[in-house]
Image 1: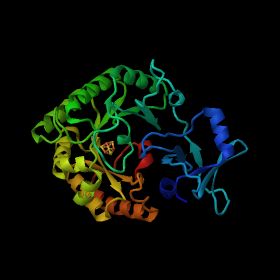
Image 2 (image 1 turned 90 degrees about the vertical axis):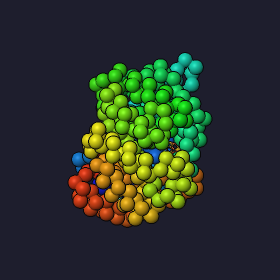
Image 3 (image 1 turned 135 degrees about the vertical axis):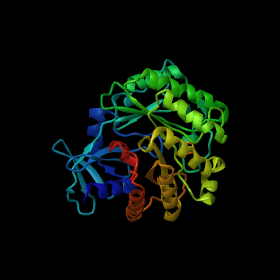
Image 4 (image 1 turned 120 degrees about the vertical axis):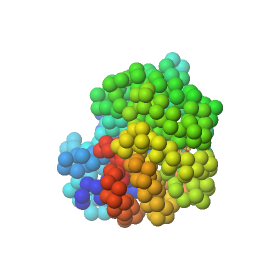
Length: 351
Ligand code: SF4
């Protein structure tokens, strides 16, 4: 099977890991998978002969794809045929710091930083003030994370030489906490100047989510303080579906998202601004409309297959994902815009 199709199969079916392999991994590396947000939880895999296709596969005991151990090598087979697949597969070991349980003096582990392949992610707040129904982040209590332990956690994460860039992400703050996020954005890119920092956020200004007059100045500020790129995720373009599942994002509105993206592309250029869309929770025609609108702003669309949570929806089928990719490619070609993200490893949970 070609690595790309295999990647999609793993995304939607997940992978089963035999007890033999599990015990081997636990002994060798400790925790061998991520269990943070619903979109990044699972075992990180490099697949294909060139091992240049990356995927995070959720753990699923019933998956038709099985990882096992044979002669000290990880093998991969289809449960039905019991035959090894022709796919070369390797487990990407989580950064050693992620198996540590204490990062601060209270002896508690706060999820300040997590690494996914070559990228570390900082979460400046715990929880989220938004209530998107399919998201696990807002199930944690809302609060601001203090800078010193975040800094300590990132310093720790960067000791893993495989980590080459950083995303400041996490949930969306209450409007009154927007300035705090700015202090976080100001701190990290300046302190760790050898690394590229991207910021994932909703449209926002210095003090407000919806005051358009602040957008351009705020984006320019992010550029001036050394933020390398932006991820401004529209996610759902169908108004009814967005209102149902993401009321606060619906409140910000598609027109503010698109205006913010337009300003960002002028200030940052196409290849430094992306906007993620969830594929499989709304009709494909709405996702494709969004792809086209994002291209018109001069930014790059990014497609994230829907991962079910809270009993909402189902995993899209591989056929649906292939169709979404094919139709998106046609639009991208028309506008001569690449599909985000450009980093191969960061495509581990996108099309
Ligand atoms: S804004 Fe993002 S982090 Fe917050 S609930 Fe919605 S999807 Fe989750």
